[in-house]
Length: 298
Image 1 (spheres, one colour):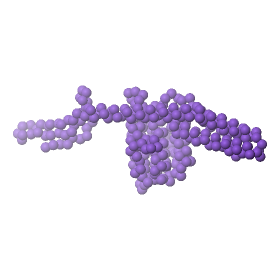
Image 2 (cartoon, one colour):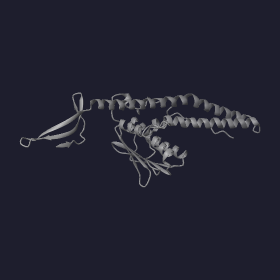
Image 3 (cartoon, helix red, strand yellow):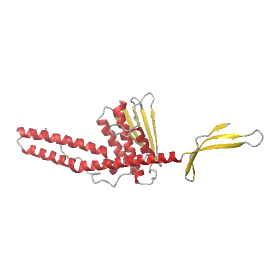
Image 4 (spheres, helix red, strand yellow):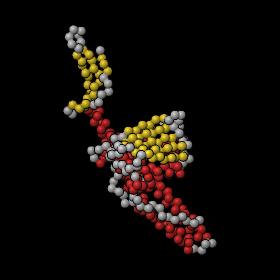
């Protein structure tokens, strides 16, 4: 008789990793009953899985480093130049005759430069929000929900429960990126009227929940899309690297619920590459005032 083995934890035997497949009872009807256990050596499979996890971690680390670099470079030169240009044009418009044609063109050009600076500021915020490094996850998520609400037709609300606290930077950045991806899916695919982002603090963990009343989880991609989103696989990788868990389910009667639980301190890794969400030393542009362009008079 063959008895199917339950899904037991992996066991290490020297360098080999084995997993029970099945057990057989052996008996000749007279002597004692013996049990034959069949094991499978999955060392190679385990090694490949670990390599895949390490590759995914390093890929996310490179992505975050590149985001920070781009945000820093966009702030250091293009944004500063646009700020200077807008202010200079505005001052020239003030000094020129109020009824002159030149004054009108200067005011219009200053307004264009101001709008361009505003658009660039939003890009920098998306790449690496300074508020996350300066004030923590609560302020960053509140800003994210406000920006999502302002640029879409979806009513997005933000709720916080429990005493807010600064958590591990790995966890903060992972939670922000996950909320960013979930809200992006809501805006692009869900056709939702309402969405809620809830952040709950507990003594040992933090819970992040994003719910909407849209069409459901069908459009959620398993792989990153052309817009550079994480996709479901990327979201699970981010959560797993902090030692947390992710659950995505449908809501009744319609909509999607993304529930994330992560420890206040990220799971320890072997090296820097195992922590894609660990920020580099605080960039010089973090916390700087990215505004300061006064509106031009048209």
